Length: 410
Image 1 (cartoon, rainbow, N blue to C red):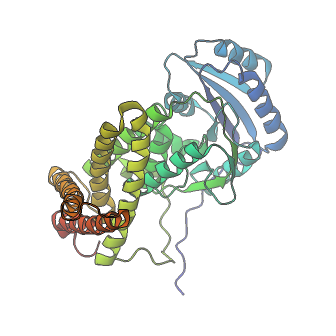
Image 2 (image 1 turned 180 degrees about the vertical axis):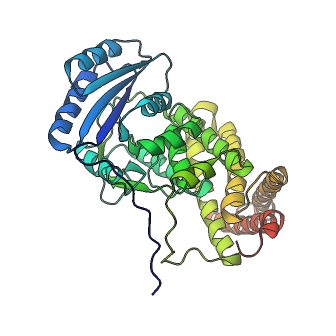
């Protein structure tokens, strides 16, 4: 039996000396800040076997948040406060983390939606050197989550989009409960461009692309009913961020290779067979992209229809998901990188989309012209057949234009 590759030994901080810096980004949280910070400080002083600091990062609040933050910093020995003149959760985390002298930097939301019992499982693998990044996940089977069905559905769809479009392997991008080793933060954070809600996703995608070790902790999580997050604006921002990362990876403008060379562990030999190679592998990956695109279309349509109306929402959702579908198939199904042929590939995808619309709409027109009183089940059957033909046409078109140069081995 072949021996496993030996990983280099980290030099983790000892238990007594390790310093954990937990950042709490806030904007206009005067009503809840003091209660939450005192509860967090009390818990950490009793339950955390490491030195710690709680840093309140005020994102240009216009209420009494900053005054309360200053008072807490002057009263509690393990609490500090930083004020930023500009809004942006990502901006606050990036600034405070890069300036921190701690061994591990972390953050959590001020509403303490995540059960604090998960703090030690989050940071311990980082202190020991076992992992590079750690995240809380609400989507694990052992997680206990209380939130509305709409936010649950949107969250799962968003993470499914990330898995398809960016090949993300982590399960929950937006849980407000994350940590990383400071040496990793110093290398990785300068590459993160987003300063707001997409910051978390971009950070994790870059960490994965750099082959860093991401540790996931199932968490118990209770939704804050008083949250002021604009779901539509956040979803739109996230989709733009996904598109930006796809362009960056395709064009080679994101230098994750440098971080990988500096920090990543050597890969262990694969012990479980991966996705089949060749045509079968392409078909399977194409199917995953197709299912995810359909879900993404549905989510985007729901978010837009309440604002723009059904027809415009349908058109925008169809076009956006068609472009994202082509980008995902390009990178995931056919393993094509770089900007060469990018416009041609997207033109082919849009042409295939137009053919699909003609096939589905045309089949219904012919059916109704030949059989005006046709039943609903016949319509559904015809549409299913038309969509299957359209999907086959799309796969063959993309494989001919994109996949032929990638080779049959992808």
